[in-house]
Image 1 (spheres, rainbow, N blue to C red):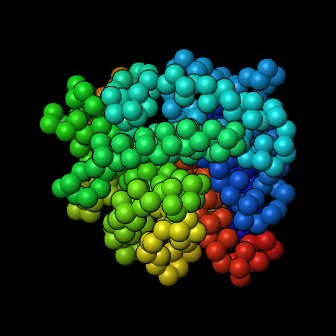
Image 2: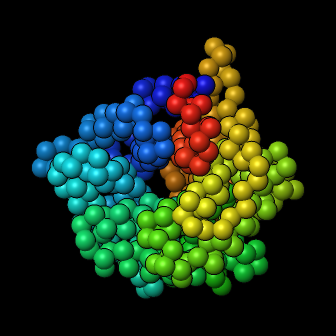
Length: 365
């Protein structure tokens, strides 16, 4: 049933932002890529090819993409372009990816050398951005033979971990304002105040993916911090198998078990071993996730529930997002959002790749 759910989701998927190149689509593309790698089934690649082809035009151009926004989120979907080039050998995919690489050449940076999250978020580093940018930059550098891009991405991750580390909790802040001017930022550290689970999910996935891309020797400077984070994440898992929206505050009134972050954590914990990292993997980790985050609709088909629709910092419309624990639990919850289903695909694919009997079972669905 799970593979049928993913296949139906991809068949019915509509671009998240009216066709504009965006990270939400990139979450689904990444999930489909990993399903294709794990199972070898053409249907997953066919979905990526169909969906991405609609966003890449002649020239090349990327639908709705404006590099002058300097939005690091827009880089994530470039990983699908690299995969399409890997699989087809067609230059147009790498040329389209080059548009994103060109943005990064002039993307503004903090004083410590890390990309700003967006031009409209000056001097700010968000954990989300570490998943959006560095894995693509590393993959592009490897595909084009530009090792300086790989080294730069690794240096940025190193600096960002230092900037966002919170000694009191051992976790990482959702964001940091290097110049300490944002109202949401702690005046002493510049960091945001509460630990949003999905922010840590983006970070955990980024670190595991980068470890797999560059190999153990190159990843060595980041290894200890990554393994410690994965161990801490595993320790914060609830007895029934998921993680809270505000991950380290189980007694917070209104806190709830959030499914997108839970899928990200399961993917990271499972993928860590394949990337040569040590991580605790409880028995039945993925099966428990699947059972807890999918629920039946009235027609009996499944949906992925309890996904935080969006969360961030600073002004958004007419609302100020202050980064407190109460703020994070106030955001709307939705079902079947790309930010949840994509990571669930990733977790399923990683579980499939590591368990031959499960791979054979899924391939038969």
